[in-house]
Length: 340
Image 1: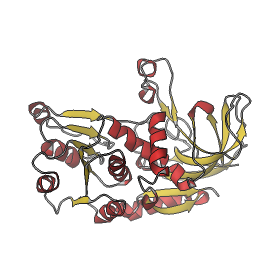
Image 2: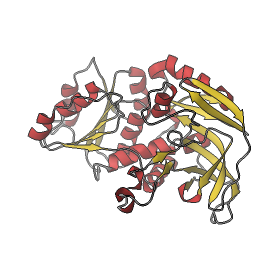
Image 3: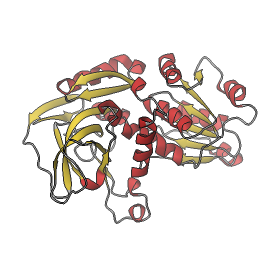
Image 4: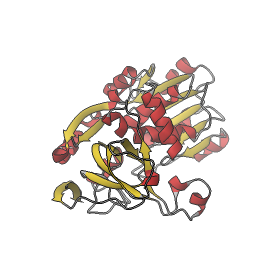
């Protein structure tokens, strides 16, 4: 079978390797779609702090079961699936207290261990998540980033009836905004420097958009949400400017969830956090229940993931996909790699 190996930053080689066999407690998945995310792009540019080379990428996937291990009951050949890409130890404090997604020894497929950028990929049965028959392969590969959004919102508690400000309209920010609607927020506003991304947000049903740099954020917050401003702010960029905006525009007693991945350490006005009794909350990954909620939201059309897919590339053109992302900049939202 073919396997795409990133041998060094910016260089992908294709190798012919033996088709793997599933272990007794695993299933073999025939990969159909692979989504490229921001963290993958960091790896491509050699800027991911926790990834070494060579590495096989691929953690946003959909596929079908090709073979079933002898002790992996409850699955069917040809069944549509995705999987949780987390390998946890099961013994540390987080693992033994229901937080396996932040295991002290967490390894993520495509980063610390090889991922699914190959034709067939063996997956432990406990990580497999079945997909509805009605879900397209593209939608199946969008479950993982949607689960990121679901978990990020869950970190702030029940958001029903709350007003939500999302800073950043890239794929994750868009999904956070859509999921906020889908989970019952009363009103959602999203900001970005790119009107292209804001138009996609509007196409996805996000009614309030702010073009950062041209529209005043404080004025927009007051106009849309009123004097009580936003209950919840989701920072989905990972930049100094947006975390500063989040803290400075936050209403007293409100919550800021840090979703964006910061390449450089930001300066945060802790004085304002203390004075306004703000809750600053981190979010990393997801749990199975977040995958299940993501599948529910997508399959019931409560969110639109298809609008986020701006291009597709065949598996043999993996490098071309990265070149396109570099050249298109904000015009590239979610890029899919296809294997059939």
